[in-house]
Image: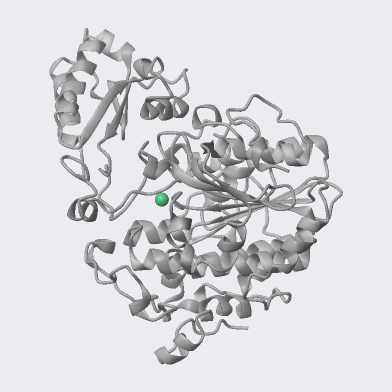
Length: 553
Ligand SMILES: [Zn+2]
C-alpha cells in the first residue's frame, strides 16, 4: 500500500488531522496492531500491578541530540510517548560525561557503562566506518561499517553470558547509532541507506533477511517524493519564529518544507523530517515480530535510536520551530511505538530506558543576538592559520610537517620525526599553545598530562577530557572553545565539553523503576549497570558507571 500524502494541498485537512504524518507511516506499514494514537494508562497500570520479575525485553531508546532540558521545555505539548516515559524514573540532571559529545562516543557509552577512553570510540571519525565490510544494500558512495574499533563488552554480552538464547535487534537511521549500543556482537543491526532501504554490512551477514527485503519493498521513504513537511498545528500556536534566515544556511528555512520530487532525493531529505523516525519505529516493531524477540525466558534487547532530532537540529537549530514540531511528532511516534509494543508483548515484562547521545548548542549568531553568548562566546573559530604557521616552521627546520598532528581539537606529535630534525617538542607545543590561546573564541588549551591531575569535581571540562582520552593515548594537547563557540561552519552543532552539549535526559520506565523526577547527578554510563541490576546479570568487566539504586524499586 503506497503511503498517503503527508500533506495535502488543503491546509484545513491538515489542521483537522494533526496526526496525519504519523498516520501516514502507520497506514503505509503493516503493523496491524496499531490504531490507538493516545497514550493510555491501561498498560502502565497493568505493569505496575503485576509485581516485579525479570524482564524479557529491554527496550533502549536513544534520541540523537536530545538535550537534557528539552523534555521540560516542550512538556506542555508532549502527550504521548515522551509524556508516558516522563512518568517513570526521570533524571533531569543527566550527562554524557565526556568531552567530544558526538553520536559515536555517546552511543558507545550508553549500553557499555564505560567512557570513550575505554570503549575506544572517541569521536565520530573513529566510529564505525569500515570499508572492509560493505553494505548489503545502499548507494555506491556509501561506505561500509563495523564495530571493529569498539573495545570491550556491552549489556548484550552480559545477558548473552547469562543465557545464550539472548538476542538483540538494533535499529537507527545512522550506522553508528545502530551498531555501537550492541558492541561487537554479530546481532540484528540495521540502519538506513540514502537509497531508502534498511541495510547492514557484511560484518553481520551475507544477505538481507526476507523480512528486511519485504519491508524495503514497501518503499515508504520513496513515497514521500514531492510531498511536504507541514506544521501539525496553527502557526500562531508556536512560540518560535519560523522565518529565521540563519537556519539551514538561508535556504528552505520556512514551513512547509518540500521533499525533492525524485525518490533518491526524498530518501535522503527524509532524514531531517519526523517521517524518518516513524519509519524507524515501524521497522523496529516489524523486526521484533519477525525475530520473535521478548518472549523469554531469556532477556532480549531492542535498541532504537531516533535520528531526526539531530538532523533537524543541525539544519534549523535547537531553538527553531522545526525542532519544536519535530519533538511533538516524535512524541506521537514513541506513543504509538509503545502502544504497539504493549499489544505485542506483556508490558509487565518490558524494561524501557531512554536517553540522548549528546545535547546541542544554539546557533552562535542567535546566541549572541539574544545575549545568551557574551564577550568572545558564540564565535566560529578556526585555527588553520596557526596550524599552517607551525607547519611552515617545521618545513623551515627540515622536519616532516606532518609531525605536528592536528585532529580537530586535539594535537599530538610524532616525536621521533621531530627529534630527527632536532626540533624540540616542548618548544613547538608551547609556541602553538600561545598562538592558539590568542585566538578569540579559544577558552583553553590544555596539556592532557595536566588535566589528569586536575580536580574532577571542580573542573568538569578537565574531567570530561580525561573521560574521553585513554591514558595511553599520544594526544598532547586538547583545545576547548569558549561556551557557545563552534569549530564548525554548519548552522548548529554539538561536540563540546560544556553542559549544553553533554546534558541528556535519562529515563527508566517499567515495573522496576521507581517513578519520580530525580534531580541528582547521573551519567549515561550508569544506565547499563542499572539495567544489569534489573535483569540480575553481572557486567563482564570493570565499568565507569554505577547502579542508580535510588531509582529502582
Ligand atoms: Zn549531530
